[in-house]
Length: 84
Image (cartoon, rainbow, N blue to C red; front, top):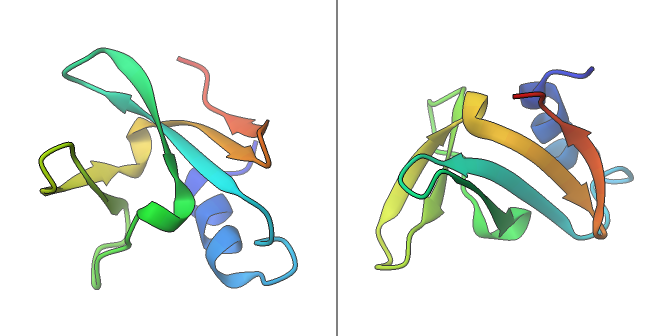
């Protein structure tokens, strides 16, 4: 299985592979569920190699470590998952 940091880098930097609608499913520790967010809605903070940021319901940026990513979807089909 490809490491998540490599897959996310490929989506960001490989123009041919990065076409399509991507979603990231990560573990929401409060809810105990997988939260799916569109890839275009996440940000990669400068100088941080193993986290991304997503806005919560109140509009505040939350940092999500890569180890909490559980699934990646491309055009609605799961292309990557981490066993729990």
